[in-house]
Length: 171
Image (cartoon, rainbow, N blue to C red):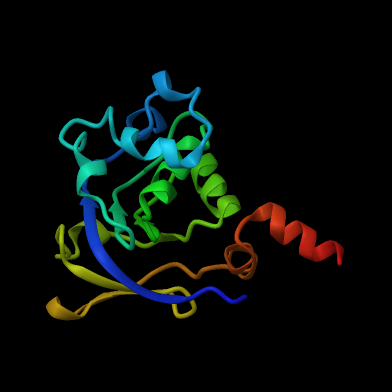
C-alpha cells in the first residue's frame, strides 16, 4: 500500500524556539505507553499551548521553530502527535534524536528555513508535497522549498515505520 505524498491540512504555528520533549509530553506521563492515551497530554507543559489537544483535529499540520524536540529521547513526544491525527511536522530545525524518532515512527518531519516567519498562521490550510519538498499556502500565495525528503525517509514513511521497513528488506 502506497501512502499519500501530497496532503493538506490546517496549520498550527508554534513559534517558540527550543521546545523540549518535556514541554511536548511531560515526564509525569511517561508511564503511558498506549498511543491513543497520549493525545490529551500533548503540549501539557508548553505555556500557552496546554489546550492544544482540545483544538487539534485529524489532518492538522504542525509548524514549529528552531530546535523543536530537543532534550531527552522520549518516543511519546512524537507519538502524542500521531495520536491526535497530526499529519506532518514542518520545522526550522529539530533535536537530532527527535528527528530520528519521528522518521523511525513514519511521521513526516520536514525541515525548512524560516517557516514560522513565512506568513502562514494558525488555521490556514497548507499543502505538503513530500516528493517535491514543497510547503504551500495557496490562499496566501506562499510557496516554500523545504529540504529534500530522503529516499530512506520516504521508504520508512511508505512502510509505516522503521520496523516494517526493516522486515521488507528481509524479504
